[in-house]
Every structure is written in structure tokens, then in C-alpha cells.
Image (cartoon, rainbow, N blue to C red):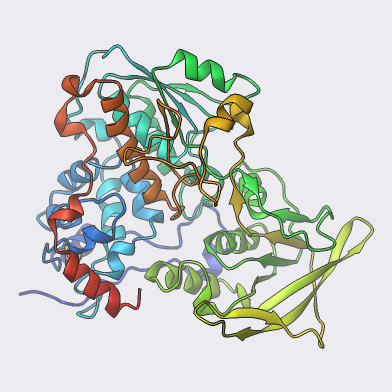
Length: 484
Ligand code: SF4
């Protein structure tokens, strides 16, 4: 007999979790719960159309339903090599279009993936990876984040010799520096990144391109290059007073917290911005000892980045449970300094003015100045990519979109032959699962470019665009019903 109600996932008590970087707010399904939840899935795979990496979601959920989580992990590995990470932090847009959304709730796809992956401390024991001989080609990967690691994994297991260059002293990219440890535990990162590198990736940490090694040297010495450098340059608002010592960008704040560096948050923290990075900064501030944390966003709650999705709702709900306050429709216009420190933040309330044919625009109501005390201001206002590390010759050859992203072909090859690019610097979704898709495309593209396709294990090539097998009409209807 089918049970249509989604199996509830339990959460740690907000008062306890807010004191800890190691207590994950969301608990894990037990085996009984995971089996019951997975058994609700009807295997239609409509959800696959919402997954940028085109995972066989219906297939892997069925495996858990029949008590075979190892097969779940094997199916996930067809497209991505870190199921426990993605099972915790994916934006899970797949759940927003699950056909059971209005029938007991969407299948808890993300939680089920986490459950399955966590059953296996060593994936080597359940995966039958090819042990390919060296195919005679060498590829450099620049950037050790999700996209670079995915490409390094799938190329290495095919017998390509991969050298990975990472500027920081640790691998993981944004998974390490931008996602706080309470959402993504260090041991989960270690397990999955360790498994990837143990396939034989030659990792060079603390190596900055353009300084420790020239980009031109890499282009000369390797048969192809995959560039997955993320958005490293913070975009600051330039608000008067932002040169004070207690104003920082969210990427710097989260990176310092991640590496255990001291950050003095004081009592009152204001975060400027309304996206996921603002949320992560707010909850990290609380865990570092702040008492009053306020997120300030210039538009309405329904306009915030990522809305309307289940993921955006969940993140807001969890933050509110931990006592984060949201102030919508405001424009901070001055950080008031005493000496070299900001002590107050001045802002205006906005009104939203309808724009012909576009989004409503926030317009400040300037006749009333509002004020709040602050000990730290964190600007979660986006990042950009700086390509100066490539040197003039190559930077000139790299064609960019008006938004500063490399223009790539259907295989993610840039305008420079042999140079492929992917991840946050290249796609507009800027989420982990899209970074994985870029790498999947580039792996296929690089192997073709290297004329190595006749030497590969076909069953270990990332499967692209699986969603095309399923009805796009049903997906469009499901999206429309969700207002997406
Ligand atoms: S849309 Fe929902 S019911 Fe259909 S396969 Fe995906 S998770 Fe299962």
C-alpha cells in the first residue's frame, strides 16, 4: 500500500545547533525512514529535467527503496563524484518539480542521496572503476573546486594524467571556503575529495597561476587545460565608510571562518544582500558569538535570489529559527565610522516602483533616515572573475560574454583551442550541480579533442542530457504550476 505523505526529516534544536559548527541542523534519515520515503517515488524521472547534471534520479531512488543504497551511489557516480556533499548542499531544484509535490510532498531527493552516500566510508569498495593504462595525454586542471575535481576524477579514471593546480592550501573551492562546516562537515569533504584524488590526481596546493607558475607554461606543457577558477574577486558596494576595518566581503568572512582564522564579530552584525551567501554569513556570525544578526536586502522577500524554490524557503526558515532577522526593502547608504571602525549603519526604507515590462525597482524614501548599531558589516554582494592570471597574450584571446564569462562551445571549450572552462566563472546558475555539469561536458569534450575516445571506458563517461529521454511537456507543466 503506497503512503503518499513525505517522511519528515528532523532537525537539531536551534538553541543547541547555533553554538556549534559540527552539529548539522538537518538530521539524517534512518534506514527505515529512507526506505519508506524512497518507496513513494513512482520513477517517472520528470525531476531529471530540473537537474543540471541530468542524474538518473528515479533510478537511484528506486535502488534505495529496494534496500540497495550501494546501487544508488553507483548511479550518482555516473555523473558526479561527491554524492554525500551534493546530498547536503544541492539546491535540489529537482524536488520543486517532483510530480508528488501536491500529493504528500515531493520526494526528499537530497536527503535520500545523503543517506545512501553516508552508508559507505570507502566508495572504492562498491564501485568498479576502470583501471585504464596511461593514454599518453596530460591535462592540467586549474582550480580545485567542484568543477575542477569532477573533471580531474573522470579524466584520471580514463587514463589521462591530470595535474591539478589550486591556489589555496586545501582542495574544495567554494565547498571548502564558502559553505560553512555546520552545513558541510569537514569529514564529508575529506572523504569525497580524498576518494577523487586517490585515483591518481597530481595535486599542487598553494600554487597561484601567474605567480608560482605562468599560464603560458601550462598551456605549452599540457595537451589540454580545464579552467575552473570560480569567482574570486569580491564585488563591494562602495558605501561611504566601507574602508573601515570591520567591513568585509562575505567570501573573505566565510573563508576565514572555514580556515579557523579569528574574526571578531562583536555583538551586532549587519549583512548586506539577500542570497544564499548572506544566509550562510548570518548563521556563521551567530556561531562565532554574535547576538543580533540582521540581513538587509533592497528588494522584497519574494524578489530574493533563489526564490521561489524549496531550497530558498528552507534556508530562510532555518535561519529564522536561529534568530536571524531579515529587513526587506532597505538601502544602506552610510557606514558611520568612529576612528577606523564602523559603529552605526544608516539606511533608508525603499518602496518598490513598478517598471514597464521589467522587475519592480527599489527606490529609497529619503526623507526618513533609519539607523542601527553595528560591530561588523558583511557585504554579500557577489563576486567576479579576474583573468589577469592568464597574462596579456591569452587574456586577449579569451572571448567573454558582456557579463565577463568565457564564451564556450557545446563542449565547454573556450575561444582558445585546448582551453576548456566551467563552473561559477562560466555558467550563470553559479551552483554546485551546474559546476558538475560543466565538468561532465568538458570531460567528453577534452577526450574528443585529444582523440582519446577510442581508448576510454564508455560506461565511465559522464552521461549527458539524460533528461531528453523524458517528457519536456510534463516538466513545463510542473514548472508552471510552481510559478517557476
Ligand atoms: S519526479 Fe518525483 S516521483 Fe517522479 S522520479 Fe522524480 S522523485 Fe520520483
